[in-house]
Length: 158
Image (cartoon, rainbow, N blue to C red; front, top):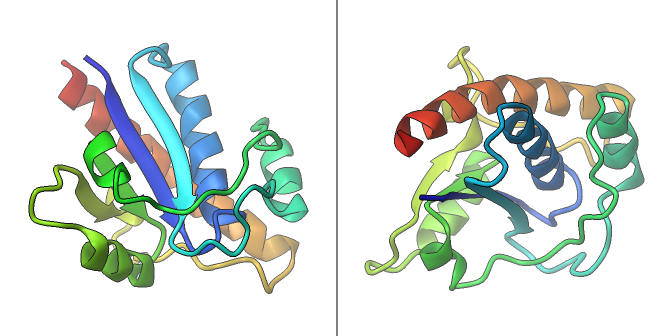
């Protein structure tokens, strides 16, 4: 059995590729890379085909996560059937995804930070218009939620 996870932000160049990369590393470190499929996408097609923002690439690399080979894509209708879990990086993305989802779609849609131990955080702030601290904060939140997400997915794989 495999489990499929899709991370979603606006343009798929900052938060969601970072979440994909962080979670991919956590999954590989847990020895589950062959059982969990991971991708990311954007709610909008602003950057389709482009690599992640260089600041995201650099921030992730400083933590041992390589996201440089990823390319942005937009969420597609088929994603709601292909993935078991679609994770929005903020509440605006969550609303957008719920509006796209049809009754027959099987994917569960949640906020990534539902898996963060500190429930005061709901959104991963968009670092795009900020500086290096903003990218670090996004990474901190994504990494913390990633551990909770991995624990949740591991229970589903048993």
